Image (cartoon, rainbow, N blue to C red; front, side):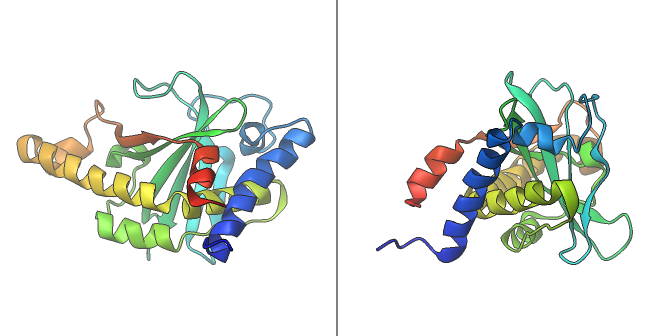
Length: 206
């Protein structure tokens, strides 16, 4: 009998099944993430106004841009957020990179200037990740379900990345100063980890 929890089994099913259905239709998760756009314009948000879930207080968008930390095989990446109590108050939770086939290849955290977020300590981000869910209607609904599943499957790895993020920022701010560090364009990605969805599911025994 499997010892894997029902939520993890469901997440594994979604994380594998949604890209498979896109592939069977001659598409991919990477193309679906572009929300119907014919081409990926650097730094543009897909969809244009982001996907916003007011019920769960979460949002995301997909985009692509150059970075010295960007993997050579990256097509683009998602940014995931938790909404704060005030308009414009949001915290960046994680980035998830895709290759051109729509396979997830990297998780990462960012410096404050990258998304203009309201900085939250690791403990707050961990709580937001643990309850993360995002839902929407229309063409982006399967993408939202896939992101929800990915956060659930990779929650331990995401927590470690966020904790390491805070450790890196604390160490560097001791030399540089907090505000200067948060606006330092030389530091975009703070922590990152290469991932394999297949290996993660095998590890869980799903």
